[in-house]
Image (tube, rainbow, N blue to C red):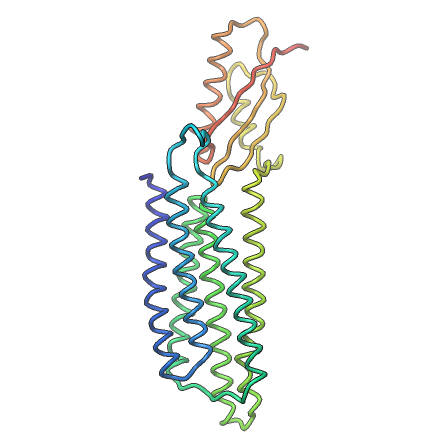
Length: 296
């Protein structure tokens, strides 16, 4: 297993372990404290466990070596996993908004006990730490699935904050003699559900763009152009396309060389070009080189 894959898998297992603990803690705490918000937050944490398992599945497939049916490898498996996680976020966000809205249609809810506050504070801290850690690892190793999973933790942290504010308002409703404060949980829940849905939408949009093999912009390919110009024998870059393939980049390039050189010399230039690009830019998985004769 590649070193970067081990790091991604390790980060994912940390997330699963923490989420299992938080789901159990929130579920028991919600039942004992009578907090519907905390029980709903436990369900959200449980969805994080599912998304992390999907990440493991996606990373495992993405790192399979190329075969006859998949000559460019299985890199897009991570983006498929990322899309699934994003859809889970959207579904959870919709469910959160519906659940919060239903509070206004029923009897006035009762304020939960203090244990709900303590558990939610712990949850917010743990989830934000998980987000920062997974986002860092995901960016460092260019893992779309892990970055998506990190944002899932951030959405869970936001939902915990909403629940925290709602529980606090509900507990203060009697003290301040403002009974309507008990509905603060529902209002916050609706607002956060909108944020969660937006995060899911953005992730679907980003992953879908990669799956459609978006061509990199001129600014994004500058580093590759500089490397190509450093290769002896390359006179002009006629055309360059760098496209995304999962967490990797595939480059299609046409370069002009001296028309008087031998076929072997041209082959050596193309080979050197490919090897240098892949050695200096670890995200480059393959380079397809086409040689053209150079004429003034």
